[in-house]
Image (cartoon, rainbow, N blue to C red):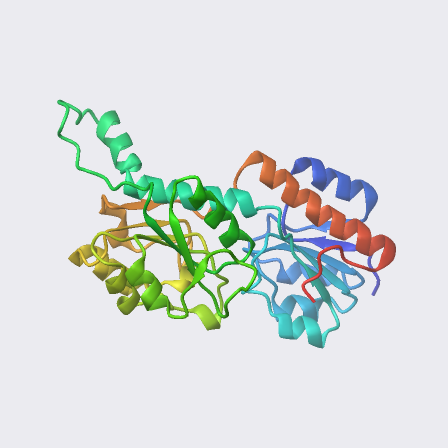
Length: 314
């Protein structure tokens, strides 16, 4: 059985680029399907699949698309991509590096300020009519001049660190290995970094290697004045340990854009005034969403014309 579809599209790239894609190629659009697997049989000859960091890449999709040669992903993360299966099927994979670094770094700082200066709490305080007199609002934490610890000094981690210079912060980092090119002090122990830091921002990859690396020991080391910010992956943090540390006062506060079981969030976090939450939207700006879609399109056009990806993962 043959089909006319060249491309299977599981993730929308935005209206303008979806239309551009459909003008240039025969596309099977499945981004509104809750389970695309049953419909993949409609495109046995498709050579390219468009997905996203959130959707991932499943072995079952690769098996259902025997003609597949390439996968173009919208986003940077690929910890939920079955890269072993992609290799076994001879399928090349690309993502969209560099495009969202600054927006994600901005969100890390927004969450840090929200928790430290209690801006989300203050917003509710004013809008609910609780502001009756000056002096009734709880004290916050100064950011300028403090110690900033970063877990994962990749592109996003570096963008976060550079912003620290504008606030006269001392910056240190923890990585799988030291980066000789980095102008920041390296801490080989995550617990030691947490003990030193006033703010600890997580910008490392997800996956088995980093699962629950932020545990009760690390949270205790960060301490009752310390603030944790996670714009990495929810799996990096032990949720039960985080809730207990916040509830007991062992940790000062947390700003979270990612969660282990999204969109479900631990119920205990919802009523905590020292916690600021966002729905995994660090790259959710008009400019970055456009640039992400454009980078995916660059990969698609390059592969369809030359057989090569612009930003291959392997």
